[in-house]
Image (cartoon, rainbow, N blue to C red; front, side):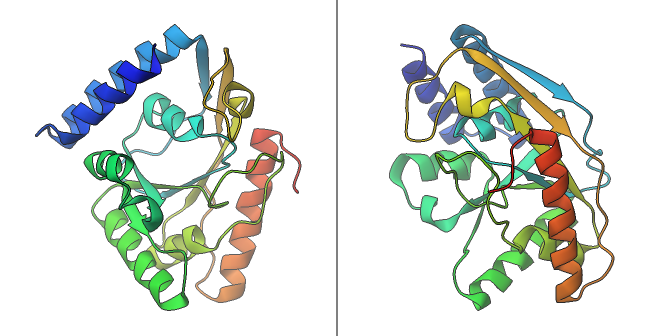
Length: 223
């Protein structure tokens, strides 16, 4: 009863001719009301840098609730990075385009390089880029392998990666389920990690440092 009008409202806001800021304000208000009605409480610890210092934000991903929580409750506008597989889905793709998501190809190396260029351009335009480095969710707890795209983007743009750990979202909406449960989600924002070089080994070291930070912030063991 709650999720159907929420989905309809989000779709309408995506297709209406609104400014990006206006769409964000309206959709956040709708989402906050829905979260309260569902018994979902969210606590955010820490702050993101302002958009005058755009950065890459990397978060763990254990539930479909994660993106909603970050979009609604973080204090800075975010540009979400989404796989091109979702771009052409009839309803979801239209919604994601309406909310300014950036679509990237995680396939071949040439396409991945083009995706990094798109993300660099987004950062240069003054937008925080949010990436789930695991790529997708899994029913099994624990952090999985991180893709390198977020760290290639940060190194090429000479901007920091901000680690974000999300706790509790898996219990609120488990992977493979469409039935949310009452619960609390805690979002912890860590200290920015600056790139130290542009070589492949530098990007791998940065990835490992950020992954360790997210593991501590979200409390999930590495898998």
